[in-house]
Length: 190
Length: 190
Image 1 (tube, each protein chain N blue to C red):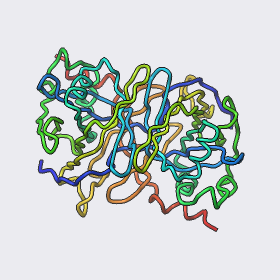
Image 2 (cartoon, rainbow over the protein chains, first blue to last red):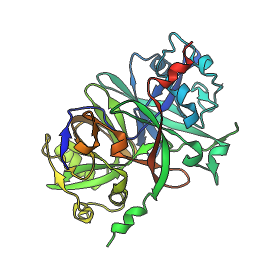
Image 3 (cartoon, rainbow over the protein chains, first blue to last red):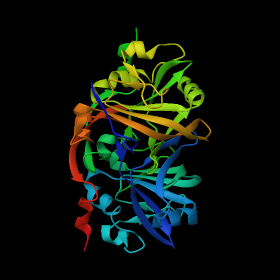
Image 4 (cartoon, one colour):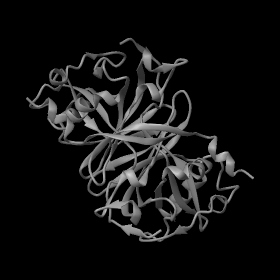
């Protein structure tokens, strides 16, 4: 297969579509983020890259807590909207009709409508040129009861969004299951 | 909606399924990773969490280069296999029939069959309890020519895998496009 060499770019498939939440000046605000990944197993940690001029980032620094809210596919409009406007100018909670609640960390705002909510304590910041990689220790996880199967989160009930770039910025839904992990590869054992 | 509180866990949807490549003792080796995300825009950087006892990690430290290879869905067996065995004991390149090539960084092994290949220079390591977050500066990107549309990577031609956890470890395919990014949210403008 002939390859095209495209130069350095932030290409990764798939990316999540998430709402990162923080209290800024005592009020909940949410921004869209796709640049996130798990960073450690025990204790559970994740990383999310945020531009340092973002309004939400002020709140993360202020309280040293933030939330990660995973949408279902029917929340695509709200999830995209929170990446189009700044909390400095708009009340996104009101515009989206979010019901916000607080739990273990007290200052990490969580969205009732989003089926998965992670409460994170800011463990570390790693400064890069345009973005700050915020490392959060995942202190608590909340999942809609109707998205569980045998008490475990069921991705086919959660129906998360998949964010992609390249030809265009787009949200996809999850397709069918192809194979089980730590299983299908055993076909190559000899 | 009633929420269930599940305790701290590494829950994030969706995760990518990637092969991380490095030369270890002069030979290419690949490990499966799902804990990765973009970390900075300019210069382009990504992070991937790797257990420090991994064979591949030796090579990343040795050469300070690594690759990220994004599979298409027909490579699910090979992608899973590289997470089941260690390069210390098996020649995964031979077992999977990978054609390996090198480009700009000389020591970051790239897999011909994988439609997207990123060459990374190790920019920074962030040490956590069980994992090391390897921050790579993306120095070059290679994409199969038949996965481009108007010269840009086309996710619908790449057909990447989506890795999920919860009820079980599973690989899913990408579903249909739901909406355009930085667009659909404008419905909430008033």
